[in-house]
Length: 75
Ligand SMILES: [Zn+2]
Image 1 (cartoon, rainbow, N blue to C red):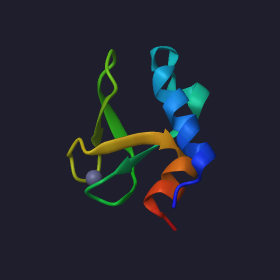
Image 2: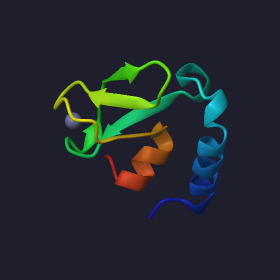
Image 3: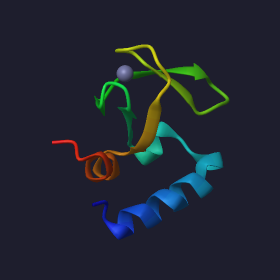
Image 4: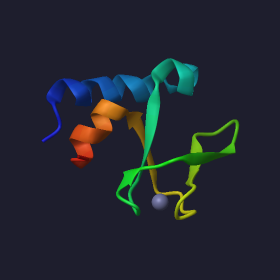
């Protein structure tokens, strides 16, 4: 189960996404199709739209590594 505090954090994360930068948040990308942390390609610099480099789909979840790990039970 995801940690409750992590879920709170991710809500804040999305509320603040206008000032979002990858560097600042140290985010990772989880591909729901590959079911793992993947490298991504940003499709549009003005949008939060990413493509998985592995399967080329856009089923990407953005979050901190810790949050993704607990939420998707990544080992
Ligand atoms: Zn993928």
